[in-house]
Length: 580
Image 1 (spheres, rainbow, N blue to C red):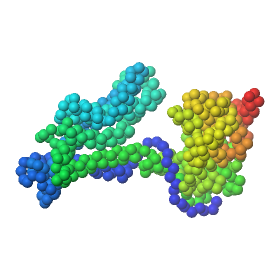
Image 2: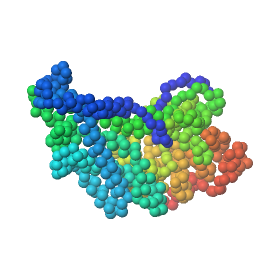
Image 3: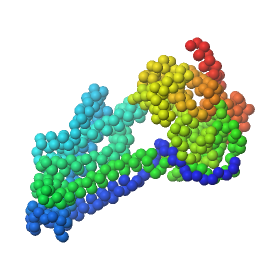
Image 4: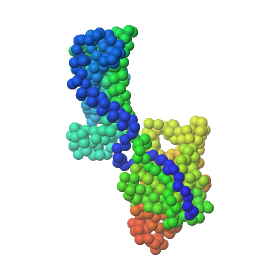
């Protein structure tokens, strides 16, 4: 093929495997601010305590040389008092946050390890507790326990415990439902080991984020309690105490409140920056290790020559891991013609789904993809493509329909989103489009199905709904990534028949990925065989019936290991329609 000049990479975020810690500006700024706070908290009480507590000098000074922030009614330097108060304020906020985290996380985990009745009672208690503002709860607790630093810390800890418990319970709900937790329970693993070995490690990241953010809230609330007289008592003082003292003179000497107010804002913003920075570092869609698909230099080994009738053209596609530079897909090229079904077969790890993810703009984080050409019709996927154009070009059917549907939403509400958001259809028009698509995939009672949640449907019905959703946008190319693996044989026949029927009636090109040669024989026109990220053979589907009709030893091994099954999806679908 002719050389194509290099162009800027297109960013395709996704979710991959283990990723390196991603530094970001918010996190760097927040940590730098905290270093300043830590130095002040350590050094100020050592060198400035006398200036902060000495009853000498001129009282009620405004900003003058030697007293930048003035002096209070007793002649104490306000700058020194603010800096010295940093240690007490930060320690109180940190202690309250730590107590709240330990109590809340422990209670949240205990709720989901408890018997069902206790679990429901615990969840209702958490819901009741979080319905009240934290500062209000802290004031009530502090008023009951009395004034002082210790009681203020306990009050703030009690107020924040419910928030930690709610988040922990939500996270533990998903983790506790995993098979490895169920297996551990059946094996008699004690509850405390379930928590420490299986639950806690899998929620460490979000808990670290919420802890950093809770510290900022605790800091303000600690100061609030001291401001109203329920926190630090003389001779101790914190930001809230200094603010309260300065408030009485704010009309005549407003400089007195500038120091503690600025310090409180500075430390709170530092905590928020750290929390937001940790959240960004934990989010693969916002960190700097995103997957990339970019144009490569011309490839002399490319096999794509005539693309006049091709809808999908992939030329010289290579995928590597960013960190190790390991090649996962090596220089593959193929085309899919309009109205054709091309199958990709191979063992697990051969690169089938990875190839499809590049075409579908879903390349996982931590991977880099290069190609000389990747086009669907006249859409170049090596440059940024608008979501509207992408959904009108490519439809996706995933392997497991159970994980592709949101259990909290009805089929109608979630499957119509792409039609309303990306294609600009009204809700009514989107509903009619989905109803038509449901009927085309022979989904019984289509009107009723739109109102149902995914759990009310069988696996075959869910997959029919996903096929209908993929076809509702009228895509030119349908990518079916092992769409029948999770289904029983009878349902497989029906699903394959629906895909083939749409291919023939609507002329939709299909990229069909599977490791099941019997299924591929039944539905595909041509087949490419992949092993270790490379294409080892290209054959017609009709040639996959015997080892003597293929050349490569790996293809022969696949045929030898595949049982012979009469699987004619079109005939099966015709027979089903005849009995309807």
